[in-house]
Structures are given as structure tokens and as C-alpha cells.
Image (cartoon, rainbow, N blue to C red; front, side, top):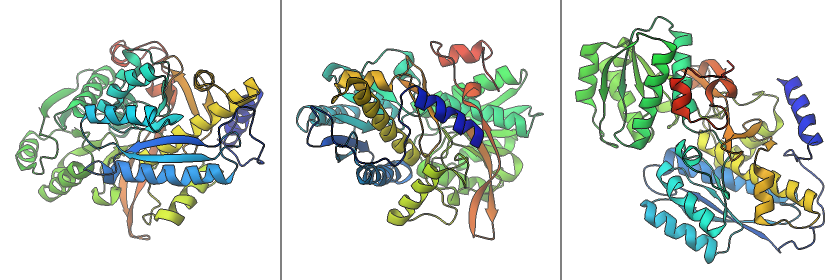
Length: 431
């Protein structure tokens, strides 16, 4: 891994792109503003704030402080405008317009809800507002249209459920029956569709014994757990997150479902202290499960230290994947600005920054990020999975039996829609 990073770093440098590292402060280029105002949008209230929004906001906070300590972006101090994402999509769009037209931010970073990303993307293009999505998972953003001013510096949701299928078969190749229990809205439906299609390709003959669709935040899953206990599937797949994942996990443990069937969660949407040991779980990108060169990677270690110093950490140093994603978005923006400044020899236009970010490669606390698909506006990442285990030495749950599937194994090639890629048997996949 170290050798790979050195080689890739050399390629990046040769291409004229900046890696994220402490650099000497330089004088601002001609035409630079007095400061660079960047909106950071995340759930600061509501059910998604705990597992996603607050950790993401905190990560952005410590990373912007780091950027400013090291001279800002192109010698210009970054001024964050933290904004709550909570509310219906029309309210989120109204707030986006306010940030662009009244606050006059240079760029908008963030968004966790897929519905909000889908709603914001065309407005960003309309207003020519550089926007870097920091977490939302839907593949539809760049598979159903082109967005000149919109980017996503983390992978989309296909790697969550395809990665889950690959990990399951690596751990239990003789699986014969599967069932699903997912929240009845777009995220749950999309997650199950990707998982079951992937399973049918990878394990022809696998049988789906039941698919259950409780309402989001239902709070009681006794009826669904009773059905699963009777049906005895080898595997129960779920895309639950937050309080739903915690509640379901506790009820499944109490009723013996975790002992009877493998419980497979496609994405870490809650602190793992609340999830029973033996559950299989994944993360969208390296993040909490498999950060690069766990003890040796300087950016990852610095991120952990900065976050811990200001906001504290669990005994196992767990930080939600959304926190990593927001640092990736900020880092991508910084790299693009500095690359565009170098090329133009002055402060760049929004269009020049966008051109620099497309198809770029940069380092981050989660490792090397490649903007490789969606016309260079969508990142690809590996898909790490693990088994949760109680570690009595530290009194906390930890990840064990970690396996990370390479980005080329779990992301479709540029120009191909994800479901078409799955249904055609993953052409070009390199696993």
C-alpha cells in the first residue's frame, strides 16, 4: 500500500495536481477575494443529525480549521456557513438559492439526503453555483443527467449493496436463501434492488424467501422478526440506519434472529456500539472500517487526532462515514481551486475550478479519491465490509474479518448505468 501511494503521488504531481499536505503560505494570486465563503449543509436537527449530520458538520469544522492554519485555499481564508439540511426538499432548495444569491457563497459543500441532492443539482446548474455533494448516495444524480457545476467526491450507493453481496459470498459461499427488511422509501428500495440483483448474478439459484417493507422510523419490528424466525433465511439483508438500525438490532438480538440468520447491513448508519456482535456491516468508502494504512497514513491519523481533540471519540476511534465524506468534499474543492490557480496564474473562475475537479485524483483522510465516472463528476471508492465483534480489552465493539473490494470491482465503468452493469454481469469489473 505504501508503495502504491508513493507511485500514485508521483503521478498526481506530474499531472500538476496538489496533494493535501501542509504547505508554506503563499501570497494570494491576482484577482483573489478577501475571503472564500463556503456553505456546509448537513442535518443539524432531526433523526439524521445524530448518525450523519453532526459528525459530518464536526468533520468539516476541524478540516476547515486545518486548511486555514495552513494558509487557506490559494492563500485565502475559508469562511464556513453552516446550514441545516432538515426539512422537505422544496425548503432545502429555497435555502440553496439563499446561500447562492444572498450569502453569495463561492461553493456549496454537503447534503446527506438523496432526495435533496436530486432537487438541488438542477438548481446548482441554473445558478452556476459550484456544488460538491458530501454524502448522498443515489446513483441517479449523474446516471440520469449531466450537471456542469455539481460533483460528488464519494461513491454512490451501488457499492454498498453490491459490496454486501460480494462480502456475503466470500464469508458464506454456500448461501441458499435470503430475505430483506428495509425502510419503505427510496433508500431502502434502491438498496434491496441492487443487493438482490447482484446476488442473482453472483449466485444463480439463490432464493428470496421474503421482502419486508416497514415504514421509516416504525420503532417496532416484532411482526417482521416473527416472520423471519419462521422462514429461517440464511441471510437477512437490511439497509436500516440510525434509530431504526439500533432498534431492529436490539429486537433481533433479543428474539434470537441474530443467532439464527446472518444479519447483513449494507452501510454503517449508526455507532457500532449499538449493533450486536456477529452482524456483518459495510461502509461507503474506507472510512471507519478500513481507513488507508490504518496506523501509517498521516492524513487519516491527523483527522482522527483533530476530531478527537475537539469533539471526542469512542474507545475504538469510530467516526461515522459521513464525516470522512465531508472532508473528501472539502479536499476535492481545495485541490481543484489550487490546480486551477496554477493553470490560470490568477484567481480562477467557477468554470475553471469545475474543469480542474473533473477527472481529478487527490488524497484525503479516507485515501486516494478518483473522480472517474459520471463525466468525471462522480468519485469511485472501494467497498470495505467487516464483522462486528466485542473487544473486551477496550470495552467496545470493533471491526474484524475486514475485506475491502477494490473500486474497479464495485463501481460501474464510466458511461454505464449501474443496474445495466449488474444485469450484464459486471463487464470490466476487476476484483
